[in-house]
Length: 180
Image 1 (tube, rainbow, N blue to C red):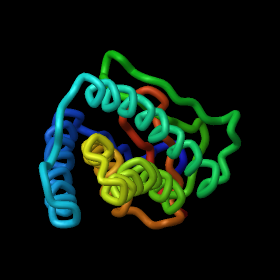
Image 2: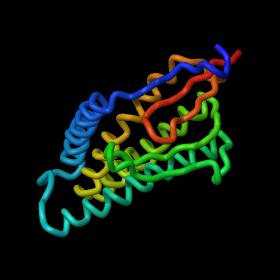
Image 3: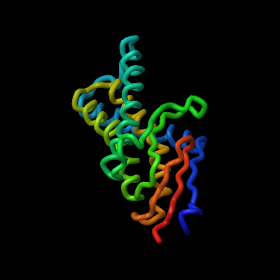
Image 4: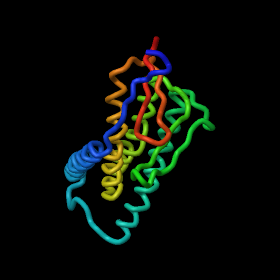
């Protein structure tokens, strides 16, 4: 394949949304069980303040999720900050981070998983340590929010590490240029 005819990988957002539900509730149940065995007592309590904490925390963690994609593009792919963009596509209901240049497959896979670790797993560990039920639910929500990242990662694993990848700036789509 030459640079003119890439292989296109496109996500099915409806399928990803279903996977996201499973990737939220299964970790949530597991985290609540771990919390119960570590600390005992009630799983969660509810109040207006907890709802506000969750809402604000969710927005902050989504922003951090996209920031960690950008940081991954910089760290693992060497993309200059000026060649990156982020935002929210309200029509599709997704936040995004993108780069306008080719990146190697190995680096982009690392950039895809960095937010999962930093906004999903790390907050889950902190929540268990602090016995913070709201942060625990937030962590599960951000683990589920990585469903699209996992789907892209799975597709990219089919190609060699040195394949070059171009991110579509508007759609959940990647253009793969296998190494020559």
